[in-house]
Amino acid sequence: MAQPAYISISCLPLPTFIEGGYATFHAGDRHPNRHHLQFFILMLMEKGELYIAEDGVNYTVKAGEMFILRPLHHHYSWHVVTEDTAYYWLHFYVTGRWEQQTSLVPMGSVINVPTLHHYTPVETLYLAKHVKMRHPHRLAEMTRQIFKNSEATESYGFWQAQQLFIDVLQEIQVQSQQESAMVQLSDQLQRYLRDHFNEKITSATLSREFHFHPNHLIRTLKATTGLTPTEYLRQYRMEEAEKCLLNTTMSETEIAQDVGFQNIYYFSTVFKQYTGMAPTQYRRAQTNLTVVPNDRQVPECNP
Image: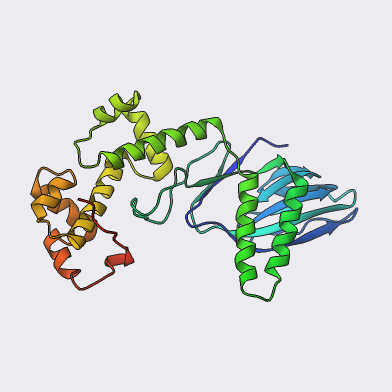
């Protein structure tokens, strides 16, 4: 194999299965020469060997191995097929960020999801570009079922195919010990910030609590959520403030103190940056509405 490479894909939005099939080649055949496909191509080799190149890098993909071609990159045969060769192929589309590197690269979400309504420690799917499959027979069975569901005339077949495709991605994803440790620390950080959001929290506070240098904590949370501890805390406080404005009669001063601000003017400034309106304007504008700007649902306040 060539130098190990990994494709890191943002999971929000999730990758979408487009189409798939079963390709067969005989001695003397070549893989098509393409450079315009907008999809990733996941190839699960069942038998034989495929000699394929991508952007000038040659690969030999053998039976029992999987290989991924990137969208809008030039791929072609660098040698004719020398024996009967067959593989399953799945086209999938990614609207989020992605990169191919020699190491795992955390990718932040392109969707701004409120922290109160969404929690996931990692938003990145890591796939090895070229690797031996751990469970080739199980993957083949799952892939055949995807094809069967996608060909069904009933509308639910589409959704079943998408669900099964996500199962395939989970089966082949790469997980490292380093990533697991980062996820665990990020989980603990987020829980602490949510539990103590109305207290004064500084970099020194977090460093004492978790026994890590502040820079390490910042990098960890940024890599897994796309936010620094300060940004995460501010966003969580603003979401709590929204709840209180819409679901209680608390004054602006009371709400500011309740969500961790000692200065009412600073609270008003931050809130306006977050929502586009001052707190009193926001409450007045939403008095007769059930949906807030950007269709963000606001749950009840817990003062």
